[in-house]
Image 1 (cartoon, helix red, strand yellow):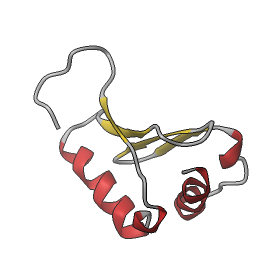
Image 2 (image 1 turned 30 degrees about the vertical axis):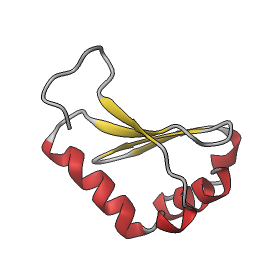
Image 3 (image 1 turned 60 degrees about the vertical axis):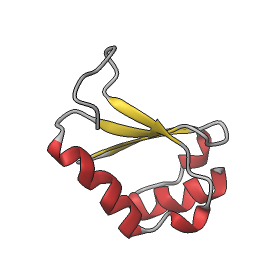
Image 4 (image 1 turned 120 degrees about the vertical axis):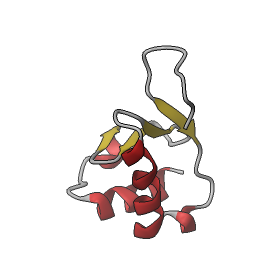
Length: 83
């Protein structure tokens, strides 16, 4: 994480290119980093007509590919299909 921000956004953009990395451990590691930086998160932006924001305490999603998601595990499965 950077120690200063350049605009109102408080998240870093990233791309996920190998669906196999999307495991509960990966998600735990990814949500663990912002715990030390309140309000910061990560944005996965290389998804097909979808978007995922990962914060320490929540996942925010947009796009019809997430329509049936009810928990973090189903979000990970949907992301695998959207890459």
